[in-house]
Image (cartoon, rainbow, N blue to C red; front, side, top):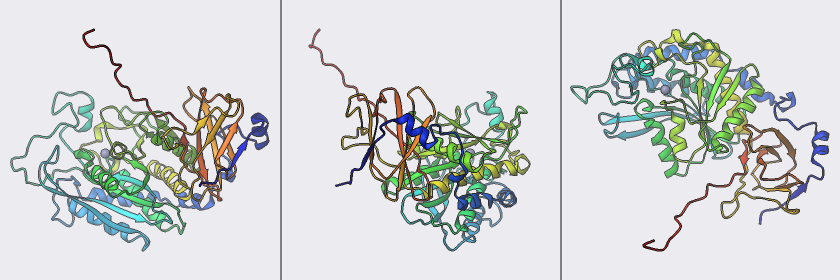
Length: 467
Ligand SMILES: [Zn+2]
């Protein structure tokens, strides 16, 4: 039997006053782990620039491009990414994640797809992913003409291209893809370097994943997510980065201090909690960078690899630059000149702070009972908030969060000891959303698990036949 220890907060306002809390927004220096501060500071603008220039040098990284050259096309690119990550540390396990794919959708011929994956083993098998996609796409008019609703070549950005004369011929047209998604790829590779060289003993296993086939319909990510389901690989969170290196919008608006984080609903889904976590912890380690969670899966008509993980039940969010320049995307103009290295580096630091905190923290607690109902009641008075959660391995304390049921982000929180239930007197559970996070002895906090009622299933009411 699980040990049940509980506490009653006799007077919540007094307790909150005594703890000096009652707001989640203020950053406390004492919250910061000097190891993470150091790791975040190790991210190098210069290194990111070197990686991006190398990725650009392959001229195309189209999933359907040539694999025979050692200097051009996707075969050369994936080999370089593999070798580069292998060079960082003997602790990194770097490999191709390979699939033989038959023609379907926008995959026009038999093709071997290889995600490039670097695993930094932790003390436990649960996995935190940082990802981007290294494949590229360029077509006449690019994303700019698609977005402007131009009649030609295709208003639908996902339209299948006209079949080539020889369907087996490699697609070798120039497609530099330095921002889409060299930026997310360079960020992922740079984080593989700083994490593997940090000497930090992480609890979670970190995975630095460069996906392929994204431009054909998230194919590499979908294949890997499928494999994770089949092999029961415990993916706890995916931080996906796609188009994160440009700070100048095509409309002239410049913003080098903001990043968007897209997260699918419903409102207290694990992905939304992950986005709130990124905002909370990213802001502490990178206070000059504004993190804007977006309560939607992605931008209108656009997609990204995080959605491939969401579709199979995994927790995943998508990072997107604040102001996009559509005329450079999916176009030969997506070159190094369109990148702001300081901006990309700040986005990398936010990812690093979030991934490191998650990987050092215990896994988030469970709040569902045997019948998949949230373990929240009005007992004992009938007017209290009575919360129970499942003990998490490695937790030394927990933090209870709540907000008005109409609110967007947590408004109040209180840290409690190593207990698994609590009573908040006279708090009507119908008026608030509650959540709980696990904290280890070093103060590293998981993302929040919220108490939400699963959607009701509907069944037809039977009526008398013939009436
Ligand atoms: Zn992309």
